[in-house]
Length: 414
Image (spheres, rainbow, N blue to C red):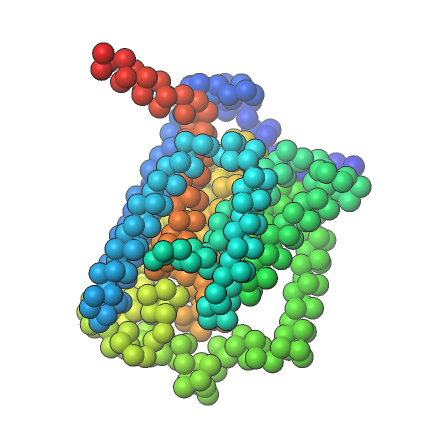
C-alpha cells in the first residue's frame, strides 16, 4: 500500500488530538469532547434556509397568482410540505449523522422500494418519477439523493483503507459501486437522467474526497462518453432535447419553447423587474413557471437585482455548509457534509444554468424555492443533517443535553 494514499483524510485526523484537548463538552466514544463555537455555522445555515424558503413561498404565490383558486391550493400544499420538511429536518438533527450512517442500508432499501413503486405509477411528462397519493405527489429520487450520500459517506469512513480496493468483497469498491449502481439504475428506470447524473456525480465526489485514486475518473468518463454516443446515434429525440439549448430560437414554438420564453422573461425584467405578481409570461407562455423555471419569473418580476439576491442567498448557504464540512472532526461527518453541500449547490447551479441557457433543461428544481414537496423535503433533511454535524463538532453529546433538559422539565412539573 503506497504511503500518502490517505493524505486527504489523514490531514483531518492528524489535527484531532491537538484541538480536542482544549475543547469542552460531553466526550464521545473516541474521547473527542468538542470544539466551542462550531454550531454558529449551523445557525447561519438555518437563517439562510428560512430566508430561501420564505422567498420561495412568496414567489410560488406570485408565479401562480393568475390561477385564482389554484393559487391558494398550491401555496397551501407547499406550506404543508414546509411543515413536514421541518419535522423531518428536526428528526434528522436529533438522530445525528452517525446513527443515520448505521441505518444507511435500511434507508437505501426503503428508497429502492419507493423507486420501484414510482415505476409502477402513472407516467407524467414521459417519466415515472412520482408516486401519487391523495392530493399529493412524491418523488422518491429526491430521497435517493440523501440516502446515497449518507451511505457512501458512512461506507468510505468505515472502510477507509479498503473501500477502493478490488480484492475486497464486502468492504471494497465492487460492493460500493454495486450498491450505488443499483440505486442509480432504479432512478434511471424512471426516465430521470438528470437526477441519475447528479447522484452519481456526488457519490463519486465523496469517494474522491475520501481518498479515491484520480484514475478512477476514467470509469464515469467512459460511461458518459458511451451515453453521449448512444444518444447521438440511437435516441435522436432525447439528443435533440439535450442540445436545443444551443439555439432555442430556431424552435421557439417547439422543443425550445420553454427556454426561449425563459429568455424573454429574464430580458423583460431589466434591473428592477416589472413588479411582484405582474409577470406577463406566467399566464400562457412559460410552462413549469412555479417549478423548474421559477427563477425566470424572479428575473422578470424582480429583475437583475432579484436574481443577484437569490445568488447571494445560495452562496451564503454554501458558505456556511462548507464551513461545517471543514470544521467536522470525524470522517463520516466530514464526508457527509461535503456530499450534502455539493448536492444542494450543484442542483442550484444546474437550475440556474438551465433557465439561462447554459445547460440543457433537465427538470432540476431550484432548492428551497421551486414548488414541489419532495425537493423541499430533501433540502430540509440535508440542512438538518448539516446542523447535526455542526452540533456534534461543538459538542458530541449535544443530544444528551436536550434529553437531560427534557427530563429536568418533566421533573419540574411535579
